[in-house]
Length: 327
Image (cartoon, rainbow, N blue to C red):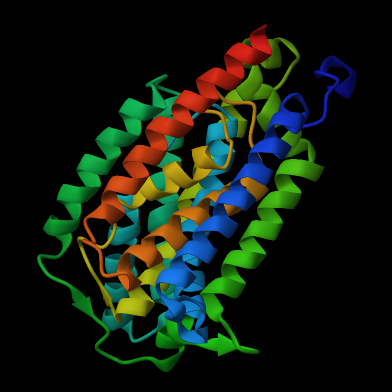
């Protein structure tokens, strides 16, 4: 297949100006939030609090990297929260049964990857809308985890390497932050500098035209679903390590935070537009707000309200951008 049949634009080029502007706005919002919270609570800038924010960002950013790819391809996965919790339980349970962290890790990644593959096959082969398909998967996982285990799966062997995964440091930086950074860089390179990323943008921007150009849209989407599932597996293992147990309820609301961060970062729900840099800024904004709610001792239920508000506002802004582009 020759590349001459593809749209002659760089990935996301149609949104480059808008995207840059939105990222500048997000940077400004992030700076204002940091200044305002630090004035109200000077402990905001303490080393321990900064590390806490980075840890919280790491989990969301890992999954948001895959979610950005999906939304760019005009798909979505609402099952990531339920899969996150189930994955942690599977990894912890297999580790306890075998005494092997390697086997527990492989089992968790295989399970999470299998969930992503299942979602991808339902969407690409059965032609079920990804919103409906992944809601169904979410419901199955939420019920299935209680059939698998009725309570938290504790780290019976107290394997040091497992606890270090979530709580350890390398050169003063938390291991989850380093893992998230590596995944972010790999995702950024894949989306911006590879044919895979270029094809994802093409499929999301105009699926019919991409198919007529010879692109295998279903295969590309399947890879994106699988990648998202594997990234959920990584995040699930880190979360289980932080809690030193697999918790069946650990992922409640996680999918909303991830999606809110991605669309706040400028990724279009209609596909074909978005950047991982924007996603990173979206994650930082949401997690700084969450941290501010905690250190200012506001009602922590607000942490669930904020993503909902963000989703509405970001979706409205996306509609405004698309109307402006159409004109």
